[in-house]
Image (tube, rainbow over all chains, first blue to last red; front, side):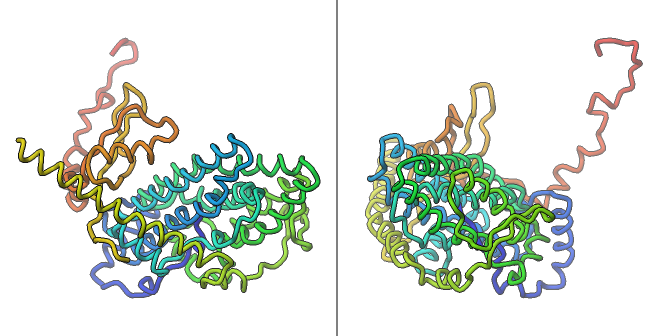
Length: 332
Length: 97
């Protein structure tokens, strides 16, 4: 998984609802405040619906695009075991995308509309997948750091106010833990290996550390819509809270591996009981979001090719099913 | 994009986790027919032995109650607390009741 910028509400959130919807809205907020779930057919403010459609579909797209950087290594995994594990993990990411697309569809958007938004570039996906995976250690670093950051982001969403999203997240979180552990195990093997292997692990950590911290989205000060998302209980913690938690649990893991987190300002603050870390380069984050990361074009191109080349399969399957139906009707 | 606009139909998926349990709704899946729906549901919803049996049904065939009518439908049961065993006061010395 892989959400980010969970507070990216659109302009429709700023529109005023009609006065007559005030009662409905109050009842809706009452349910949310009482920790009751909102289900697909329940009344909900349009801004809530649009926010969820955007967030869930972008989350789904991230899962789907997320298959690409790791899929890159399936044919070159170092052992048969690693290959089986990697295939299972990539298949899980595809499955997570499917759970999430179904959850989004309950809000009234179609699967094809969502694909169109992804392929046209209108919808975003997590910026982390626009980075390349030049070595096998990158597969380990993705599992350990990227999936680790994802888990941190996703566990609170299991308690999201929208029922179908919350239920999809429960399934996803159960599966995500395997992803992180297999990644850490790869890093452990490399860190204990030859000098060249250890260096490979260190370089992968150097590449993925900062992009992983960026996965939590802009800092709270820049994050205009956090308050609304939290009021709706779509979001439970702020970006900075989650990022801090991630740093606090991950740095000791890096220490265990004997690897160095690439941040000269990183240090333990015993009074706060937190790690202090250096400033994040948001200009890089914004450039990648705007489409100028190392692999943005390649990723979208791969998705477009998959969609176009699969077109005849989708059409043929439909035609075949139609034919079978007609035959059954005739035979009856 | 150049493909046809005919999206594969949507199916709701229900899974029996173990024999002895009810089938439970787990989500939905797109497929051209029921057979493909079961195969896709297998791949998407049972990668870790989550089920021993799958039901699929076209989403368009499901008829659901309207949340706006929830009060009219379910309210009448609210004041019939005499339907619950705890409504009846039975002295402690009476056993097996």
